[in-house]
Length: 289
Image 1: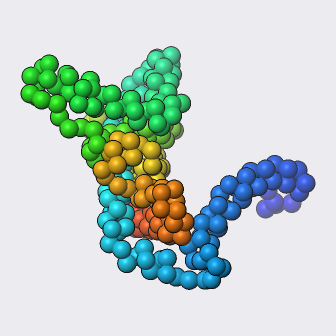
Image 2 (image 1 turned 135 degrees about the horizontal axis):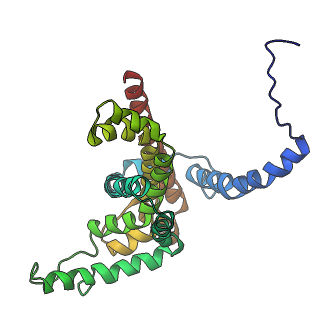
Image 3 (image 1 turned 45 degrees about the vertical axis):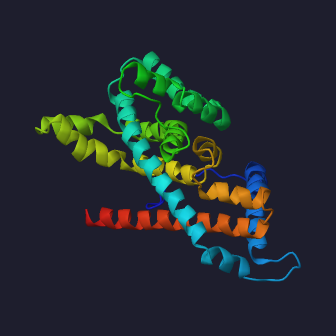
């Protein structure tokens, strides 16, 4: 008997079968992700006459308006991410640790996931009925005497944040809940046996172990919020621009595909840079800790 040799049997998939398994997904990604991105990148550096140029990038970078819109887009993304985390984490924590009835837990999950089956357009217009001047919120405030006249809730940044939170909250809750469910309960019991209270156990054990879910959920919420078009366009009434709305105008209103492609790449690159910086500092913080 030879020592030092692993007794585990590896799963070997023949090349042809591997191609059949991966060929479809890879072809889909190439056709619907890689090719459109390369087309967009080509439009950003090639003129209609087939000449290579950097004028489109120079035009976009030199325009302060685009940078202001980009800053407003990231500001919106930060607000949505922070508010979603503040609402979603306690909800995911409650579902995971306090709901003992499996049937009730499934029911709440169904309620949380249900908005995902509704079109973004329908959800945005539904919020118009809630936040409008004659909506449910304003009528309730007037009936209770809190407000004397309808408040301006629609066509504001507040409405944009509320609409995006409603859409992205299920994604954050499901992401965090999946991590919380995987935490070993014996660790929590050990902390309590050593004299840690509920608050100490949460901050020293539960929350650090759930950080991967918080980080993953926050990344999903941030990237989806900065790239959202329908909800900000409807909820703001066109009064507050974000980068996807400007890109839409460049493509379908001004028919300037070149500048639209440049703005798309700018949004993508800046988002990746922000995420990269976030990962860098989180990694350094983890090493120090």
